Length: 441
Ligand SMILES: Nc1ncnc2c1ncn2[C@@H]1O[C@H](COP(=O)(O)OP(=O)(O)OP(=O)(O)O)[C@@H](O)[C@H]1O
Ligand SMILES: [Mg+2]
Image 1 (tube, protein in one colour):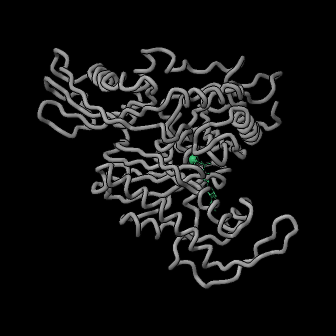
Image 2 (cartoon, rainbow, N blue to C red):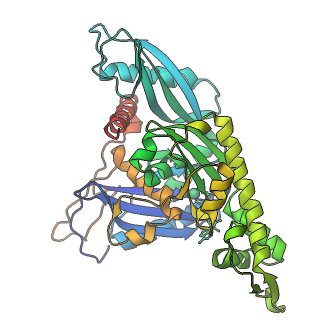
Image 3 (cartoon, rainbow, N blue to C red):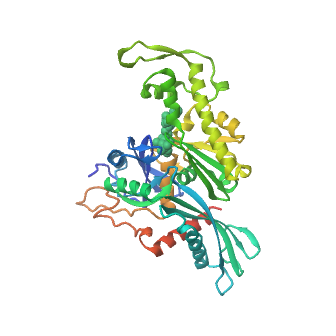
């Protein structure tokens, strides 16, 4: 089906980010050094979501189809199974603690850890019947009186306590995402909370190990996540983001949303002291009306007001989280909204933290340049997450009479068994995640 001559790949994974402004797909394999080797990217405008939540199934399905076809063309890979992101104000990180007796040998085993996680999970299972669990993420352990253990296996003791982060989301909203992906002819390999994916893509190891906040400013939502000791501890989804900045410009300049977006990208600045020399901007008239003139300093005022509001909400959220004082590595801003000029100094002033802009790191491949932008943090993290949890697809070596590479679901390559299908598989997945977490420390 594809003309490109491609060598059979080892493991390949696909991330699908269904955002408020764009649907994005990235296909990648792991190279010899363990880096993500990007094989293809697909992009489509998204019109079926509001504030990161699906509001129109057909439009969302169409955008997914377009983005997938685009990525298939570029990668010469047929896409079957994807790791899809989820976000929205309905998703929450709930802390859960639990305690178990260590098995009779008196040494912690994997089975003890599984029991611990199961208990941490079941502690909140019936919290709210409208919600379902998306992730169970271990944090730290105490074996008898030894506290703060990231990896308790092999430790001697009689009881093990610990904490975990249980990410839950509304069943109906999760079902809508699944439905869109499936209607687009794909299989949902896993669903990942988007701030976890963004964090995976942009955080450096030292930041992840100390305390850091990841702030993903998208089109419809601003996601906040706090990482401590390698694991997520807090998340919040704020309903103000880049599209609100554009909306304010359209309102202030009295122009169309599209023109306001162009103004924002070409001349926008988030922080007055960095806006430079003032000048008169010419704004194209609507439908043949005469052009108008607008001072650049007024554009900055409009943008700064809204961006200030966003970072004040983020600051309030971090204060409320109780983790503010632990953010030794400051904050990483990412998402398309972080591309506004001078967002870093504004964020730093309001948050009172060191701030840097985070782009996907640790990627290779010819199309690397196309995803090394904060806009692609989530989708790159979704691919990385798929590799961490063995959500890859096996390649098929094309025979002499077969068309070129066809990788993914369907008749040809058989996917690895889906871990979420069975109860046992589910716990194996948790355990794999847990192992990976330790390896990273
Ligand atoms: N160069 C740029 N300068 C300023 N803003 C930009 C730039 N590029 C993109 N943006 C803004 O980034 C926002 C889109 O970001 P992103 O692609 O991360 O959002 P999304 O993932 O589609 O949405 P969400 O995460 O809220 O569901 C838009 O508001 C857009 O105006
Ligand atoms: Mg996004």
